[in-house]
Image 1: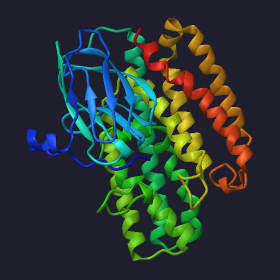
Image 2: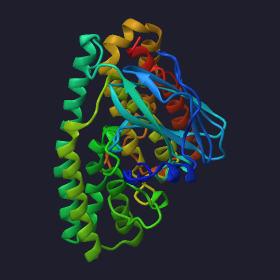
Image 3: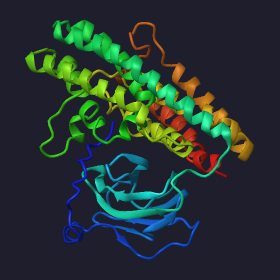
Amino acid sequence: MRAVRPTVIAAVTAAALTALSACTAKSEAKDGDAIQVTAADSTCDTSATSVPAGQVTLKIENKGAKATEVEILFPDDRIVSEKENIGPGTKYTLTAEVKAGSYEIACRPGMKGHGVRQKLTVTGGSTAAKRDPKLDRAVAEYRQYAQDQADATVPLAQKFADAIKAGDLAAAKKAYAPSRLGWERTEPVAESFGDIDPKTDTRADGLEKGQKWTGWHRLEKALWADKKIGAEEKTLADQLVSDLKDWQRRVGKAEITPTSMANGAKELLDEVATGKVTGEEDRYSHTDLADFKGNVEGAQKSYELLKPVAVKNDPALTKELDKQFTALDKVLDGYRSDQASYGFVSYDKVTETQRKELSDAVNALAEPLSKLAAAVVK
C-alpha cells in the first residue's frame, strides 16, 4: 500500500514550479558521481540535472520534519526506482539503472501528493550497457513471475467479489486475504504504474483530499467493521476486479531491471515494517500476517533470482541474506494456523512482545537487503 500519486500535469510552467518550491539543481555532477539529493518539507535540492546512461546513484538525506519518499520517474509518472519512508534526519543510497531520455527526480514530503521535482536528463546510447547474461535471465524470470502472480490474483479477486455480490458475508471474509497474496508478492511492480495501487490498496488514512475510497481496504471495513454488504459494496467489488484486470494487462509492460528488482525487494520489507508489523494494513480483518508472508515471499523471489550474480560480487552479503531470510521465515512460521483460511493466526492475537520479535527479524533482514542493488551492478 502506498499513498496516491496524482498524474503529472504536462503544462506546468516554470513559474508555477517555483511557486511550488520545486527541486532546485545546485550543480552538474561529474560522470559516475552520485547525485546528492537533499529533501526537506517544501524543497528537494539535487546536485545534477544530467547524468550518463547506465547506473545512477542517489545519495539522499532528509533534512525535513516529515518522512519523505524519493523517486526517479519517467515523464508519464511510471516509477523507475524509489525509496519510501525516509525518516527525518536519515540518509539512504538508492541505486538504479537508466537509459538515455528524460526523467524527473521527485521528493514527496509526507509521502503524499505530486511532490517537488527536478528534471533529469540521461545522455548517451538508448540501449543498456552490456551486462552479465545471468541478470538478463533474472529479469526475464521475474517478469514472468510477476505476470503469473497477476494472472492468479484475478480469479481469486473475482471469487471475493462474487461473494460480496451474493451478500455472503462469511464467504467474502474467507476470500479476502487469499485474493491479496499475488498482489503483495509483487506490489512494487503494481506501484510502478502510479495509478493502480491508489484505487486498489489504499487505507482510509492514505487518501488524498477529494479521493474516493475504493479497493480492498474499503471492502474490508464493510465486512469486518460495518458488518454489512450494500449496493455500494457490490459496485466497489466489481470495480476492484476491473482495476486488477488493468494491472494484469499492464504487468508485461513494467520497467524491470536488476536494480529495480533489488530495490523492490527492500521496499517489500519496508511495507512489512511500516504496515504489517504495526497492524495498520489489515486493521479490520487482522489478516496482516498473510500479507506479511506475501511480502517476504516476493522479496525472497527477487533475491533468489539475483543471487547467482550477487554471490559472485559479494559472497559475504549473500551468506548474511540467506541466514536472515531463513530466520525470518522461521519466526513467521511460528504463527501459522490451520484454523484460518489465510493460514495464520489473527494479528490481534499477537502480543506486543511477539510483534517486537517479528519487527526485529524484519529489521535484521532489511539492513543487508538494502545492499543488494549495489551488489548486482558491481
